[in-house]
Image 1 (cartoon, rainbow, N blue to C red):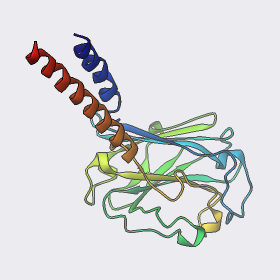
Image 2: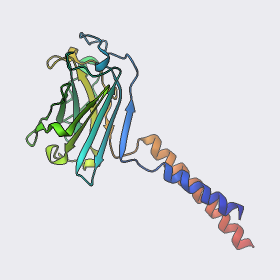
Image 3: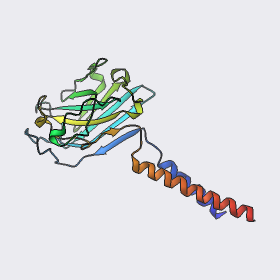
Length: 215
């Protein structure tokens, strides 16, 4: 009986490690790029970035939190690179970020306007962008980010604030650093936790079954 209870207790552990639909990455305070030449305004310093695919509404929910209140009076904008499968662009090797790849881009301005690049892109409706204090969010229809090989849950993202459009030395920060955030797939550490949970559950179940047969 005790082994049966052990098995039941382990099931929530395995379920708790299941893949999440959304993914969030934290970014250190004050980590402006060494190559950055613009003002160190707090609203250009990323603290967190999140990406989620909402399959019900067929849209992406993208959001960032900055170190200070987003001020439209200060220069700057928020660029989100999206790898929809091609990952054709990787232009940041000269500033130490060669693994930031993208093939489409979402741009959010501090005044609450936005645009999606690419053949199916265009202006984002104002109702799709929210700026609240130090955070912004954008709802981007899947139709504006068509796949170039990945399923929507496999799309990968990176957020980089810029003081202006132009040279790479105008980029203040990257989140995540030199990597991409995948919205619908667990990181390798999460897979390891899941496998460990299932292995423990299986071991407990086999022990319980063996004791039952011996009885």
